[in-house]
Image (tube, rainbow over all chains, first blue to last red; front, side):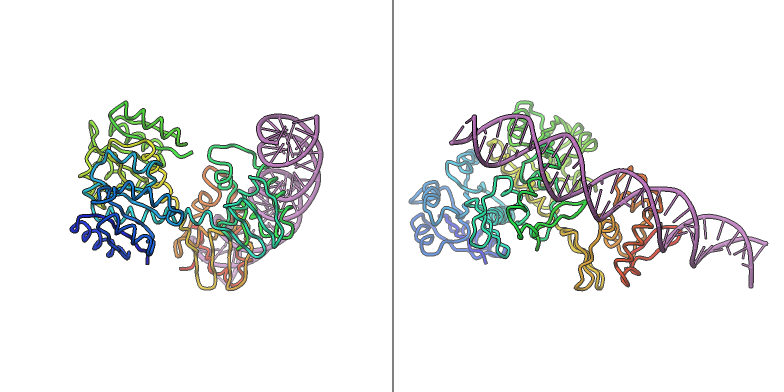
Length: 225
Length: 225
DNA sequence: ACACTGAGGTCATGGGCGTGTCACACGGAC
DNA sequence: GTCCGTGTGACACGCCCATGACCTCAGTGT
């Protein structure tokens, strides 16, 4: 079960949030001050931080910044609670680094939706950076490296993009259009030959493992599942 | 490129939104009234609808309801623009069926983030190409694979399309015309023999399971229910 | 019961289309 | 300049597809 730490100084609101997020299937921890929140974060980092902008001791903005600058918490999703819609720009933007915000008063349903949305988004992002492996073949999106057993396979940007697109959905057929929009970006027009050629080079470099990329005639390509 | 229809009666705001969403990689169409919006929606449905709550003729809420109740537009994602944070509950809830909302004033960056988030969410939902099964026969639209028990049956694109069309409506007769437009695409003219021949090969490959495809003389074909 | 009719099954065949492959041009990085 | 990554046109090849001819068979009328 995913854990959420809620930080606010209003007990009523805390209970409301706890009740609803619990009903939505989360485990909810509470903190009524910035100090308490920091302590809780150090003790056991939650999966998401729900943070009021106004706290008795430390400003929520400051707390958010600290979380972002702490290496072990930098990835922690943060949703800000605020009474003022005007502050939204600063909150969501890069300045503070919050992932989303909710303005008071908010509906419990909306809050739960936001929480789930942020968690879902983070899950997909995390997924997209995870190393992709299949048998001897290993692709590291972080370092842009490809390994075949112990051997380092140098790939070009397009080759890497193609392989990542294919390996990220093993067994699933990727149409040429899909590959184009995913690797080349939308509204880019290149010939169908282009994909073929890059795939040829990719298969070449992969040697035997090149067979893992199957051609589905008339449809697209598929990475062996 | 994904298209967004923006409906608002303030020209300045429209231009601001257009500029920023265009910069974010979307194609943006504009409408300044509910009537104009409805006409545009009928003419060429966009990928997302950005809708002000306050319009000169039809209330945004009403427009949103109409979109939801129209079968061909029911899946269209809608984001509402509103000046009043208080109305948020009704908007996001089931009552109206909007997918998200943005309160004015909003930052362009935030708007773009919301738009992308909603589109991403919809994309993942649409991807649910559930496998089609009947007894030993299993068809996987994602991977373009067909299984008969443990055995992998290689199908060509047309054969696969035919089988999917038939299996997706078990028990229902599919006319030749229907199969043509579904598998071959509209405005394609091929002989009636063509379908017969493909079906023959399909039945051949399926062996005993080929009997699951029944001929309904004078009408079309039907997959056993 | 019989023949007729027309829809669908079967088959062989030609060609078109999708893909693999290669060579080369282009352009940016160094 | 050279090298590398990239995109493209040309060409080959083979599968798949569409087609017409012929066959089979079910439905129908007499």
